[in-house]
Image 1 (tube, one colour):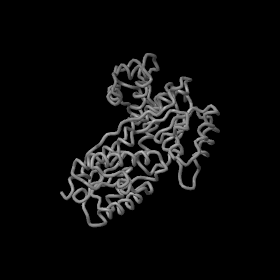
Image 2 (cartoon, rainbow, N blue to C red):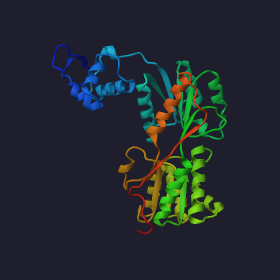
Image 3 (cartoon, rainbow, N blue to C red):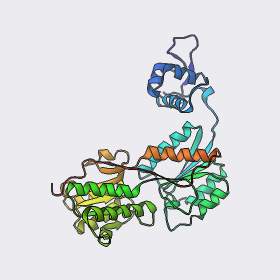
Image 4 (cartoon, helix red, strand yellow):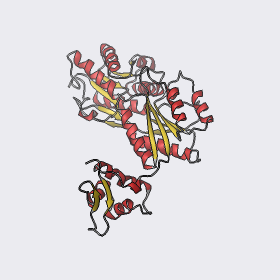
Length: 360
């Protein structure tokens, strides 16, 4: 029902809206969609004061979801552009973060500009240069070069010196003076190993991305610590059950092949996509998940609960992390610098059908 302009009907029934070009939803429909009262919807549509920005955003979102254009008088100028730099869109966890970040920014009146890196495409530095040319008010970096311990962190100091506020998600770097938001990767690995050992697995492996990346390195540290504490495995031996590989399904498959050769009956993965690759490797050998081998992912990406079998995974607190990152950035933009430190969020183990007792 696009192309419809809504205006509040004057002198009509209390719950009706006047519309140009089609039938209008009732105030009750918008209120139900937004989870607010009809009186609040009326105040928003009439442009009256006294409505919290977050509530106003919910009402406007309800209009969008119902397929109607916003009244012209409610179309406000953007408070500014905010860049969001992410590595890719093929891993569903990145679009999940991007969606929450964009929604939160929009709720504060800012227009998000999504920048995605692709093989052969613009580098992070080139994307930042383009954003600066467009006069962005701030930048959110998601799993960027800050997470790579081999990269020069000076690029972020130079960005700060140019007066561009920014916040970084996933991958703490103590040489960068900025707010960081991260999940507790060490705890995530410990949770996964503890779950598998509680089920009775005695040989557990870890499939992660390259260890030059901070999240991979931290997961490896948590994994070694958990194997040592829970199964008494010497730390040097625990290291031998870590396979550092490429991110993605293919990397997970390759890592799982090696871990299966080592006799692992439980495999912890650094991402859900890697876990899907591990499941594929298990099945390629004629084995069953979870009957013969249990697999744990990381992220709890959208739709991952509907895989075959539904994937046991460690959930990143996406909404909490994304909201905290935006809040920190907006404080910086408003001239209220937040503490230059890492804000660590606790993950959650979500048990589904890909894990069970060994030899079930």
